[in-house]
Length: 281
Image 1 (tube, rainbow, N blue to C red):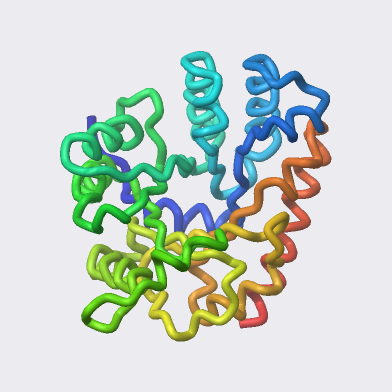
Image 2: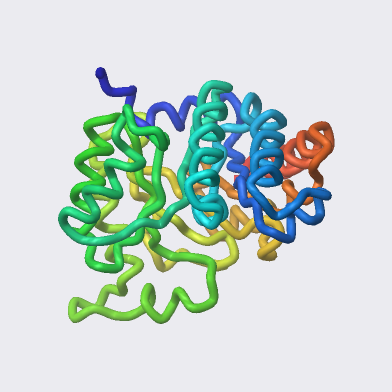
């Protein structure tokens, strides 16, 4: 099976054609209830199918959160498989938000689950955790390169407790978050138009000018919407690198379901706010 065009190149095209917005598929129990659905597999399937139907042909990226499917066991995973398949068929890139991280054969197995091109859950990219050491990601990096997929590595996350690890200072004086960014810069060296190995950098973090975010790869920016950041905040966080930023919005779009038109209108409002914000830099 021939590899896809590298993820970074496919993402660059999708962002240029559709705008950079990434919408999460996060079927929280509370959201299912808001939609008038039961917190069961049938509700999960209706929720996911509706989001894909509404958005997969218009946004650059959809990002399903694996945990909300896994909690229903094998039937939930089956819904996730179908959602990924249908989203990709409609033209969206799928970033699987699974935040996998382990060592040796276990990391290789995680990579096989999401990054092998003929795997049922094959996704265009996978979120991964490097906090067993960046080298622990080697099997995922190798398979992503082979299949044309990508990774988003947790670097500077938006959750309040992330700093106790990511801001810890190493013996060389550089903190852990900056170290992850430096690794990704090496990973993406020479890639055009964009490398395939991105960083997760929270949109809620404010001024990050002390960090070198120029990794020649995408910057996935969670935190827009329900977590408190707005599109207007993005230039202050990412500066001249806005063109490589993939702003992620989940609940602030999803709460407008189950009406397809309302979901589309919400995503279009965020897309326009992002367009206006990006035009300021």
